[in-house]
Length: 75
Image (cartoon, rainbow, N blue to C red; front, side):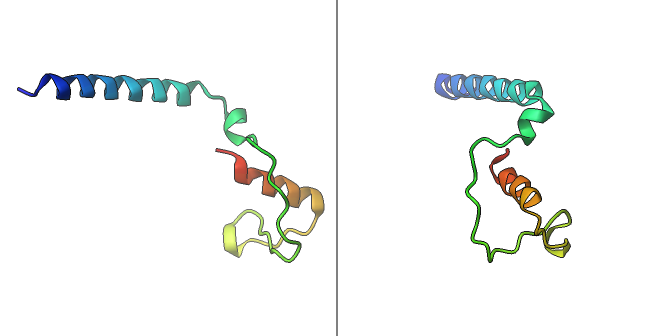
């Protein structure tokens, strides 16, 4: 049998995890993909790659670069 402290801590921890799970489940895909803050543009010499990671093609079109940069502040 554990101490009252351990039992209380366990109950509170489980309740906190349940609340976190509910918050994650209730959050829409749009919110997960939206930018939480404005990301400043990196140096113009910074090579930004599109989908596919390091093997992807370099993105040079300004609007497409801006959209990819803003994804850095999305959860």
